[in-house]
Amino acid sequence: MAKEKLKFAFYWAASCGGCEIAVLDINEKILDVVQIADIVFWPVAMDIKYKDVENMPDKYIDVCFFNGAIRTEENEKMAKLLRKKSKILIAYGACAQLGGIPGLANIANRKEVFEKAFLKTFSTHNPNNVIPKTRVTVKEGELELPEFYDTVKTLDQTVEVDYYVPGCPPAVERTLYALETIAKGELPPKGSVLAPLKSVCDECPRKREEKKISKIYRVYEKTPDPERCLLEQGILCMGPATRGGCGARCLKVNMPCTGCGGPCPNVPEQGAAMISALASILGLEEEKEKYSEEEVEKLISQIKDPLGTFYMYALPASILRRKVMKK
Amino acid sequence: MSDKREDFEPKIIGFLCNWCSYAGADLAGVSRIQYPPNIRIIRVMCSGRVDPAFILEAFKNGADGVLVAGCHLPSDCHYLSGNFKALRRIKLLKKVLEQYGIEPERVRLEWISASEGDKFAAVVKDMVEQIKKLGPSPLKGGVET
Image (cartoon, rainbow over all chains, first blue to last red; front, side, top):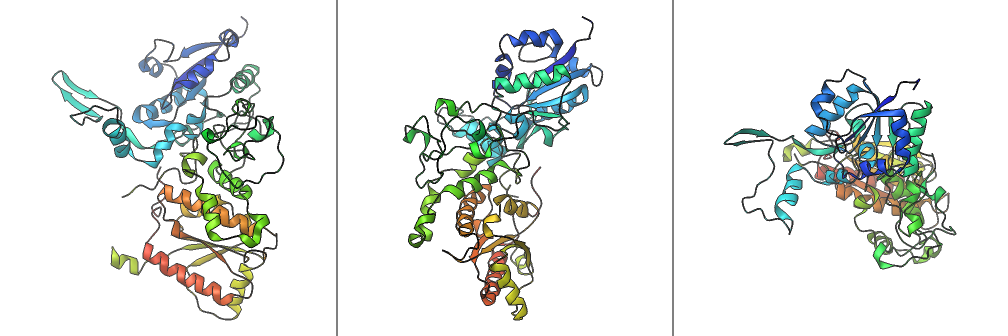
């Protein structure tokens, strides 16, 4: 070993754990990773404490793969700590990059989230109405929990981020691409998203003819033709507004894109891009004479929960970031 | 609260299409039709050019209302179907705005031709009144961070 090994860290904040598994999805290639790098911090797989990270010298970690959004005080603290200890910080996966599924909680606030999760769900049995508090005194002393914030943030709204690996979770080829560019020292300019520039449609093998739909189906309402574009068949597919790099993996199994790749480059936000795209093809244009306000209204009202559909992974990264908070 | 609303002067961003509505606003000007000064006009080539992101951006930056105006339906659009696209975009965007907690009435889509200077003035007047009733945008304090 002539060259010194790199030091990698993996951390999870507000996430489901899928990104941790995505790291292992590279299968035997993980052995190549271990060849070039030592993993110095990985809570899901190694017994190592936050204290040990605090004791590392600054910039000790070469590359930190950070997955998950910033939802609690603990997430924020670890994001700041790992930023300090890492030369390169990578927002790995949709949650770190865009807020992800946890970011959808931005249509509510802490109180509403707690009420739903701990009091109102059918499966909840909580007769004493206990909800999490940051401090509680028991007879052994005072216990602390990290504060739960009203608003979910992306990693780059919290600390400076060097690179982004999109996906929910990142596709194997995205993880490999990131690892290869790191190993070869060929990383693109800081701030780059490590994915191709084109949309999912560019990678989608389906046949596209003419995009003009008047009836929208939800996924369970229709068995789609496996050869044709799903959007043309009336199934809402976020492909046109979503950055590719996943190999259109959902489309290959007859499922529409839900947008985990985030916005295409130079687009202000993914949701607005999809509103534009969808409104363009939702057509009545040939029947101009027959047009009426009500018909358009009917056409649009077929889209249930537009915010949840167009911003499924990117609400905290959107222009407005969250639902207006009542003061 | 109520007396506050009376001296509240809303800021309205107007996206006017180059071919009809901007000319309509121009006509209102040269005809010296009086209308409230609350509107800040941005000329775009077509109402179909108005990306929903422009409107979201306007709200983020403190606009109390956004007016989008284009050529009359069905066939006045210089680009044939830009106004139809605008119509559906705004309708869809309004649903999203509602979910964001912003009153959809803050966004207004109007068809104003180059000869309708009086209509432009009336629309602005009406919109200012309506937004005064709604009060300042709930995003006035800036986007939550």
